[in-house]
Image (cartoon, rainbow, N blue to C red):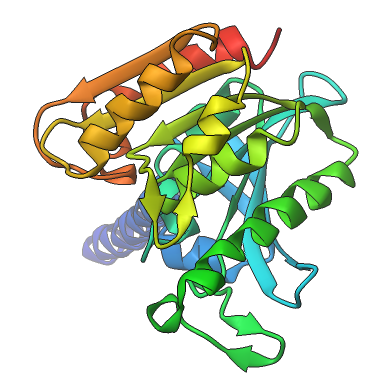
Length: 285
């Protein structure tokens, strides 16, 4: 009888260990899906990122600009597209930043059914190969910074080739020098339905915006800036004054403090929700 009891105890112990391992494995897998690291996203060609409930597909891509820079980016799309050709949001980071600056915001874009492309501007992140030479933005002169406009042009041309993208409905979100680049591109491409400028300036490293603001026309424009972030705070007011008589509808959102660029977006201030609503009103129709 004792032998049977001991055998039963051993069997129960084995079963308990087995079930515990299953539970731990499930917990680890759930955690990995819910909190996938930036590193895994950056180093994977095709895969799935996830917020708590919804999965999205992403693809690591690269393309060459007309002057020989190799630009690396991440192209995202909802796992199930609601339509064959969907609007797209192009994401441009700030000086010293990278495509990773938008990781936290991308799921909000995709949840609305849009595609998104986040790129590393030349000299940043993985986009350091320029004509076979490794270059950093820290060594750029004003001419080099102005050549970043080729990165934006080539990014839109890459999007033109994607069957799932409706390249007649483009929004561009840019931060700091990325904001200036976004505005300067949009003024020459009417397919850009709206631009969202995070901490723009009148002149970032030779990339100027006043002329583009004067010629932007009646399309929707939104500016977000911190009151204590100078000169961007003053420059944003100047740009808004230029847009105000013509842009339909213009929006200037001023936050307290001195956060700059994507730090405003990622700072828990609710700007992401405002941008999503803005895209719904100005990108879809």
